[in-house]
Length: 303
Image (cartoon, rainbow, N blue to C red; front, side, top):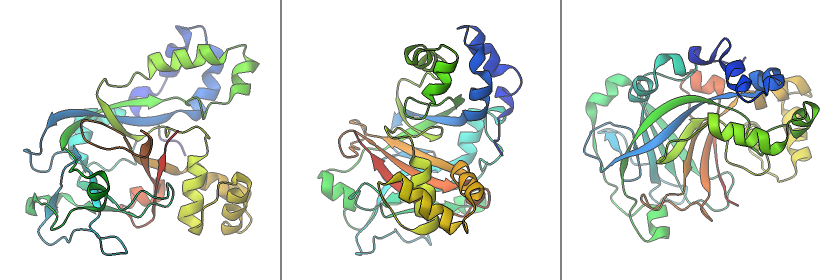
């Protein structure tokens, strides 16, 4: 079931819609909004041990080996997220109940080619293990640094919590038309109420940047079947088959697929995901609650 952070319960959505005389959309938006944590670029560098960071190199436990690709190359560290720091910055009332409040998450990737089923590792360490972390540089150039011919610049990041309404690729335009609300009206309203930080470099949860609107199905299908196709009908057939023919179960699996992290292309950091796109990491809600990061999916979207 949908987890609504306390700050956005009650008449919160209704009050946002009333200002623009769009109250007719309330039932639809109550059913289709997502919690989101925006990540804003902070101070350059990696001076603060264990702080949330994008780019650069991570702070790892002494016993932890640097993740390698299947070909034995050093994976690239994309992000290090301090979950307690994020919870403090966002505030308890703006976080869904399935967001873990303690520990560190590390995101590593291999070569982002092709753009789907990208080799990656997401590693979690518990709060007690943080006492043993130390700044670590790899013993060899990581795979994406080699491709980019540069090291990625580290920036500390800070978090802001909100809810996000369906984006242009996820909104049901028939619903808008039923209430005589134009695409332009809705998207203008959404931009106002879902304002992003000026220096946003990524987000946790929310709607993926996309043009086709089926990233959750793609991720759920890949997690359950290990297969990929651009044919959406075939994706669904694979997923339904994996659910023993149960269409409702397949729908629930798609609904319970979360975007754990999205990182944008950023000139300051040096990230360039294909043609100025984004990289996404997805996880099942159940696995996130259980802190199981062995079944995740990584892909790149670029226009």
